[in-house]
Length: 223
Ligand code: DC
Image (cartoon, rainbow, N blue to C red):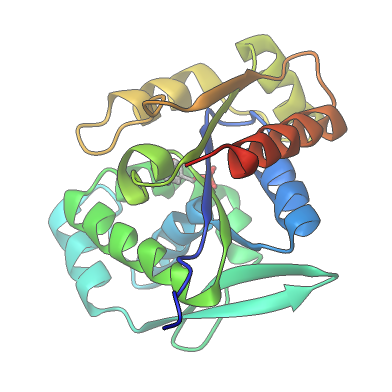
C-alpha cells in the first residue's frame, strides 16, 4: 500500500512591509517549494474591477465580478523560483497589479466576504502544484489553519515606513494596518501557534535564515 504524502504549506503572514514577500521567496527558493503571493490575487481582482469600470467600494458589484470572472491558476518558473500566477482570460497582469490605482482599490475589494470565500478556495487549490510557501494576511488563521508551519512577521511602524519610502512608495502604513486588522472577515492577526519574528533590526538574509532554521526544527520534531 502506498501512503500518499500530503503537501506541506508554510504560511507567512504579517503586516505591510514586514518583509513577507522577500523572505517567502527566499524560503521557497531554498526549499524548492512553490511561492504563492495571495496579495497579488486580491490585487488582480482590484485591477479587473478597474478595467470593467466597477466601483471597488460597491461590495455587491465586486462580488458579482468575482463570481463571473474567468480565471486560471498556473505555476511558472522564473530564475529558479516556482511561483503561482492567477490568469484572467489567459492574461497575467504582472505590472498592472502594482500600479497606484490598483493599490488604492485593493483594500476595498479584500473586505468583501464573497471575495474572501472565493480567494480561500482558490488559494487552497494551489496545493495541486505541490509544497507551498504562501504569504498573506490570513493564511495561518483562515486559508490553511491546519498547517503546522505558521509564521508572523512584523517590524516597527517607523522601520516599515522607511522600507516603503526606500522603494519610492509613500504610504500611510498605520492606516493600512488598521484597515487590515479591523476588517470584519478574516482580519490580520497572529495565528495560534505561529512563530512571531520582529525583524526591525534584521537583514532579509537573517530573517530568512531564522525562518529556515525554525522550519527545519519543526520538520524534525516528532509528530
Ligand atoms: O500584500 P499586498 O500589499 O500585495 O496585499 C494587497 C491587499 O490585499 C492588502 O490590502 C491586504 C490584502 N490581503 C488580504 O486581505 N489577505 C491576504 N491574504 C493578502 C492580502
